[in-house]
Amino acid sequence: MAESKASSKDSKIKNKKGKKAQEIPDEDDSSTSSVTQEDKSLDQIGHGVGTASLTVNREEYLAAYKDLMFDRNYAQIKNNLLHRRLAEYYKKRKLEHVLKPLENVPHLEEKYQQKLLSYQELKEKEDIEMADIKAKLNTIEGEYANKLEKAEKNFDALQHYEKTTGTGLIYSKKGKPISEKTVERFLTLQRRKSEQASALRLRYIRVRNAVNELETIVRKLEIIAPGLNVAQYEQLYIDKQNYLSKIEEREDELIKNRTNCTEHNQILAHIREKMQHTEEVIDFAECDLGDAEIELLRAREDLGNIKGKRDKLRWSLEAERMKAGLLTRKNLLRDFQDATDEVVKLRQKKDLLDKQIIDTTNKLRDARQKVNLHTAINELARKNYVDTPNMTP
Image 1 (cartoon, rainbow, N blue to C red):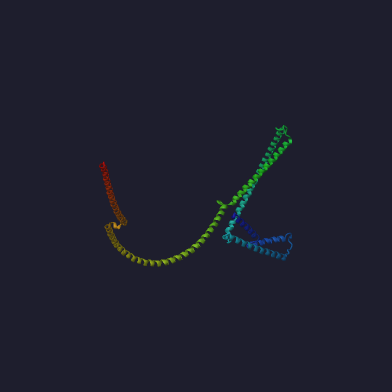
Image 2 (cartoon, rainbow, N blue to C red):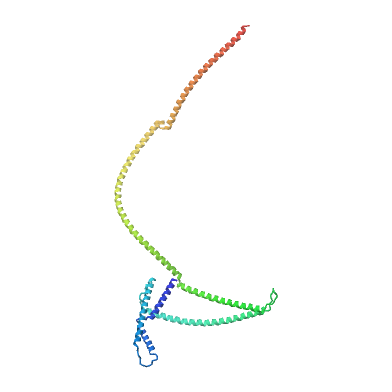
């Protein structure tokens, strides 16, 4: 659509330019135009004079010349303004090649003549086609008139038949005969409805044809070239604008990346200088590392010797522990100490119990002696008692 608008604007500007060019002749055609103007002026001035002597009014020609010069200057200024506007328009549209002078002018003139000849041929073909179309139109109009006359005759015959059949009919509900006025009213209503239907059909056909023509025109306007549509062109234009915006963004990113690259290059140069210094430090550190490795080897040898001594000491300690027995185990020593303390306590308890047993045995012995003595006394007393009564009688 944008391209069609642009093309219409270009055509309008070209038409205006052509009109101005027709109004303002070129310098090459100035001689021919002046000759024609002189012939016309002579014809106008000498019209109906005959062979009489001519009287030239110089002031009139000077006034006409001044008017024409004023008009020429005005047209020249207007032409310059239009040329400037055209140049600005073409620059905005990026069509500066239009403002450049044409090359191979004779070749272009030949092409123009050939196009004129082809236009004349097309015009003749168009006239022939128009004559054919008019002839076909006349034949179609004749056929249309015949068919219309036949249709009207058939419709009139149908209405006459309906009128003849409807006059003698009777209402089924009322039982009254149908009047002629009602039949005529129905027939006029039928004719009116048929005319309205035919008018609507004709209107529908005209609208359908107009819609088809407009659709064909729209399709032709949408198609720029075979296989190219306006929508595709607009889509391509939108894609182009998007790509241009993306290119601008990428250019900005490239500028940023270039600045970053320069900064990184400076940083890398600084890092290289530091790396040289660190390499020197690494060389010194490697020398120190060699000395440290030698010391490490010596320390490892000393460590082996010390480990051997440690193992010997461990073995001697194990032997001493085996010799010491329970002395090396604190739990067993604690249990042994508790057992010995308990044994001492039990011995003391045993001694006390032995003393108590001796005391109790002594007491029992004394008690038994007393009991035995008491029993012996009792027996003696019984014996004495038994002996005494025997003696008394």
